[in-house]
Image 1 (cartoon, rainbow, N blue to C red):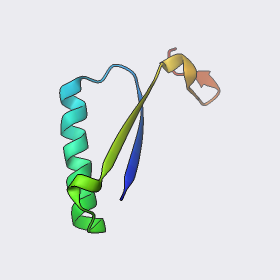
Image 2 (cartoon, rainbow, N blue to C red; image 1 turned 60 degrees about the vertical axis):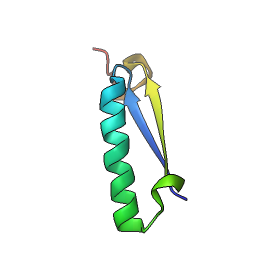
Image 3 (cartoon, rainbow, N blue to C red; image 1 turned 135 degrees about the vertical axis):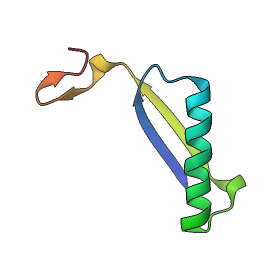
Length: 60
């Protein structure tokens, strides 16, 4: 049973998540031979102020 965790900046729409979850689930089924109904996709949203890259917060 794959559990695929996706960390994102907040703000993605429900439709974007649905399309992404379907694509990732289909890929897991094909590549990992995982049953679709046993594949989990977990989205974790984060504000840009909680991430930094190159020493700068990503909201700058």
